[in-house]
Image (cartoon, rainbow, N blue to C red; front, side, top):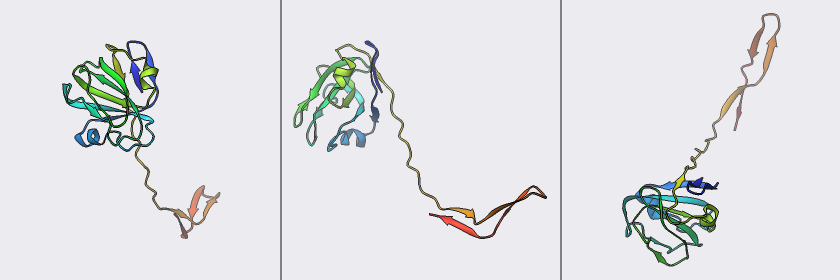
Length: 153
């Protein structure tokens, strides 16, 4: 979720952080359907470091540049096969689907915050053994398991 705190507008989409070199390098390149936002956390705040390229992008995206105080310094819809540099130094770059800027009603100076979507760990199938037969003995109020074991895949 991304929030324009200045205007109270919210984008209720999936949000991920690109806070390592590898994640920033990969970005949204070769993503066929950009349906989530990626927030780049840059090591230093400057214009050159916040520049982006749209090489190998399969679709256009909305881009919002923020300073270290999370104030919007620039924003635009980025087209494929172009290079973009923000008007001012930026510490964060938000890349998302086209329409993100309109949904948040972004203007320069707006305060933006976000809530990163937690990645759920994938479950791993495990073989579980169950007794072949369960019977209840009413006389002693006990449960008896037979020795036959059934394994479920």
